[in-house]
Every structure is written in C-alpha cells, then in structure tokens.
Image (cartoon, rainbow, N blue to C red; front, side, top):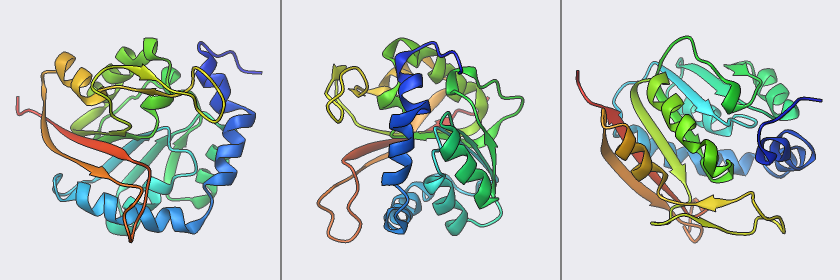
Length: 208
C-alpha cells in the first residue's frame, strides 16, 4: 500500500476515488465539457501541449482532443483505476502518481486543474501553485469552487475533503510572473450544458 502524506491523497487513491470514477463515466459529462473548453480556448490562442493535474479518466483531455486534435496531452492521476482507464483511451501520456510526487522534466503550453485544488489539503497548496507555475510555458488555468476567503464544507458526508477559496488570487499573489487574462463561471442551471458551479481563471506567463 502506498504511503501518502495527506489524508486527502489516500481518500482519492482508494475506495472513494473508485466510486468517483463510476459516477463520471456517463458520455453526457464529456458533452457538457465541450462548450466550457471552447470558451477557455478563445483566450489562449494555439496550444501544442497540455498537462492536467488530477485528470481522473480524462474527460477534460478528451474534450480538448475533440476541439484541437493533435495536441500533446498529459495527465497526472493518483487513482489507479482512473489512470488505467485514461491509459486505455490511448491519446494521453499518463503519470500515475500523486500530484505531490510529480516532478516534471519539461513544460507544457497549458497546465490546469478542474475541480482538484478544492480537494487538496490546504497546507500543500503552495507547493502545487509552484508546480503549476514552473510546469507551464504559457498558461495556467484553475477551474474550481470560488470563495473570497478560505472555507471548508462537508463533502458527501465527509469532513476535511472539500475546501473553497480564491485559488487563482493566491497563485497570482505569489507568482507575479503571471497575469490574469480571462475568467468566467459555469452554472448548474444552464439550460443546455449544466455543470457544477465552477469559477475558472486563465493566467498567462508575462513576456520575459
């Protein structure tokens, strides 16, 4: 059994993470992601490579592949079952380990999380922000639950596994080599493409 530094890693790597995979295999989830990514991509210009931290079965990467075929896609995923399903898809290089253990040897045009930072132990966020900043050659995207100040809320009857805060604002405070270029919101009452109520923030590395 793997040794994890935080309870949150163990939570997602084991049984609960397996259940999350089961709940997200519906093809409708992928369809709902397409307009989200079409909106985000309007702010990036051409992309040749993408890294997702916390990719799960790769729905975001699949949506990106459908919109911009031929990109070099990579995903980091802690849950073994999810990582195997992403590998079976065959279009992404999969790094099957915790985000906290990932040590990239290259950079990508876009590095992003979507619904992942909210589930990390708040004490490790600074290191993840540093990872995202250093792994990106151009853009960082954070699509997460937003709150102006940090709060914890129950998650499926569990305590200590869901946190809301201004992730992008914290990132920009520390990594001033980036600037905010676009942001938006997706809404669970959208009549065509309902999703979780997520705020997204696209940040670009400033020219050196």
